[in-house]
Length: 394
Image (cartoon, rainbow, N blue to C red; front, top):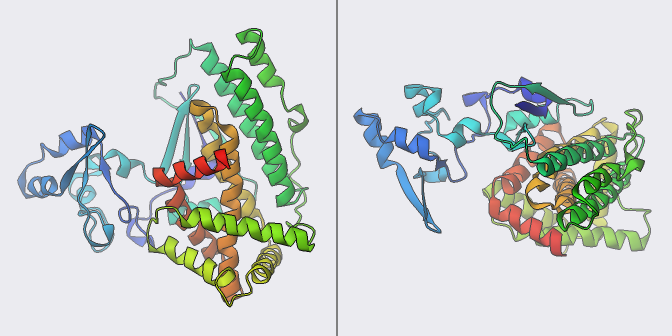
């Protein structure tokens, strides 16, 4: 089967105890059935301890297993140096599926397995934001066999269609002759056309299956030309700067604050960021709207002066690759595209609060905010479902 991933993935290697964070704390750790069966057979003191640290999760009739976490929501086999005792004693093959895969995300469809690195990992975040060059992707043949049914023509055509449209979407986001705001608008316009095509496909509003497939490939020709990689303009901080635009710009921030404040908090770092934004731009006697607009403009000028506006391009491309083609299962491309843009806006809001507090915004701040946001959104199915529902119906 084919594997497709961002090119920087080839450089990734876990830095273990040298990492400023750990994948083994802060959330539940599920144990897959094969690993559980293997753990039950391990002998000696380690086997006894291992079994004493496993709990059974019975949700909706399905009995799964997970580790009983210690203080600070740490894995019981994470030592004081943030190294895994199971890995040290039994080797890499002893890791359960979630531990072996993290921080990787996988999506398989159309005879392809797509792999991405989650920005929740500090080392992955450094790779994602490390280069000013447009994010590139690699595809190669692997030795593994795909579970994809090559005889299902409809699924094959849908997969090919989504791959093409996502490539167009990423080209739009990487069009450096346009501002970030213009790119986001064009990106969403294209997503609406893709969604229209998917809706027609799903509801069989066509003359025949073959004709509908051809029509899907013919849409959005206006976006299909290769986008230029030259030039890079500064994104406007608040529309044209008029009072009406500034009011709308600030209302957008307040809407995001209300939505994201209602999510389940994955760790204290997320709660601290929400509090910082609230105290900086909402809480009295803060100047609210004026301070928020000044902070976003100041951040934008600062990032432009540092030659780092490309980081927001990378952020949107990162989420476009991660999210868009998951519509293979639910035909909901547009909602995922909206989350791509809102993720950019929310990260920018978090960044603006840091700039407002410190008067600068370092590369490590961008990586840390990306890590905090990824933990909150990518690793909490409940939160992701809540965001999708809000974006779908409001």
